[in-house]
Figure 1 (spheres, rainbow over the protein chains, first blue to last red):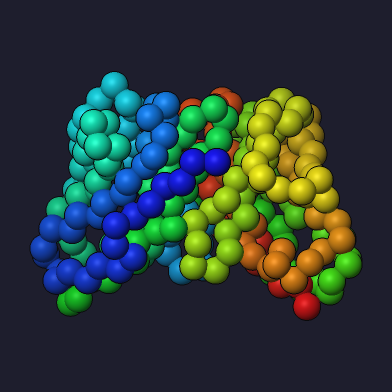
Figure 2: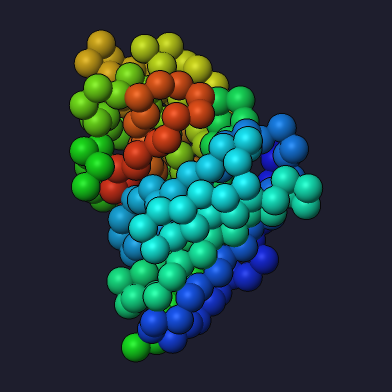
Length: 110
Length: 113
């Protein structure tokens, strides 16, 4: 299968700052991408998604950017809060399969 | 909460045993996918069921099998358990197969001794 990688395994930010989590994907045929948040002891929680015909999508405090030229995906979290502390996964989708990266652990410092 | 439920929450088995994990999908969802998540790793796709038929499979041996029922709930069965099968098993449901957003349950933590 295709691999999905994250540039940084851990990220620490001050409360109130913006966070940026990056992800590289390798399959140019992937046409759908999703960011998930996973808190300890819980299943992944959907945050935001983007189709390959878009390069930016905004949600509540979150923005996903897609750069197909370099196969790069990023998640921006505005005004990061302690409740944002979790592991964040990007997933790329092609065929009937979701391919997840290894995750980035985000820690918010009060 | 996503409305996806899984049982049991935790399970301890010994090598060679068999295990059945269960998942109830979110109301209205006809597609269920199963994932294995080892500690510190991202979820790895096992297989997907759409309207009671297997609709895609990841790189897992045949001793991993599944079922989907008419009410779209699902089971994951693992035979001849190995130590490396210890993981969090996640079920995700979606409205349609393929590229529709998947909503995950809380998972079943399986420990193989």
